[in-house]
Image 1: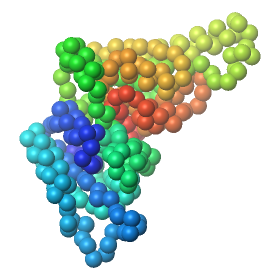
Image 2: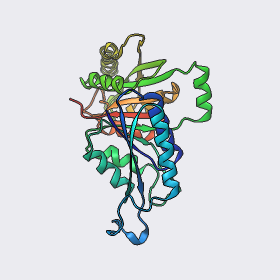
Image 3: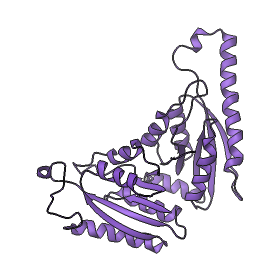
Image 4: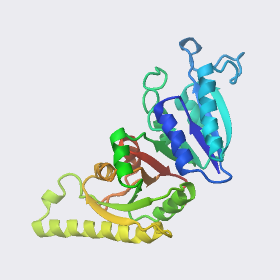
Length: 299
């Protein structure tokens, strides 16, 4: 398996390195580490033609790459480091699209002190590009949440939103193929989202109760169908039905569970009463309080 890791020296990308080491270490895996040197103002949108990409790597960049490489190799990964010059939000998605990567790993935020890299711009660029690789956005946990996690015997809570589509089977298979963590605690979350606008207000009380009941029943059925797909030896998923707008409901559940990862299919989460909402996965990835795995190339 080939993994592409984008690093910029921020605590977010160092957290991404730790996530790979702690959760993705398995024999035979290779990591391509990419660092993009931003262009200076006078260089405009292209690198100087007379200067090769790998020349004049700043000492701080070399130290960063050496540190990341040592840590990955200590966990059994083979590693190749790359240094490119350009706009990070352009270079990394292009490399991800060209390479045969199964997973792209990034910090959910970049270096806010870097004028060439607005916070989150690279992560958003990778999410919005049509590449076949799945994407893992890593958020560093706050100290208080780490202490709470330790108190819970280092459980690894993971949320799997479901919407009744067949993609949950591929999402589950991809997650278990990528991740290898002890004390895994998966929770299947189905959102019973009421219709938007004034739809409910236009209905009679009996019809309104009937519609809401059908939405609840549909969400419950989705969760029950997904549970066996996520069951593994020693792993027993929980089921939870929540109400409200999908994005807010999922983010609230991730915060309530102190989830480590939310796992989403690239097609997003569908409202029980409406058409597919492709933007839900993107919004959860942007605002979730934890890491997010967006599974792509769903069959």
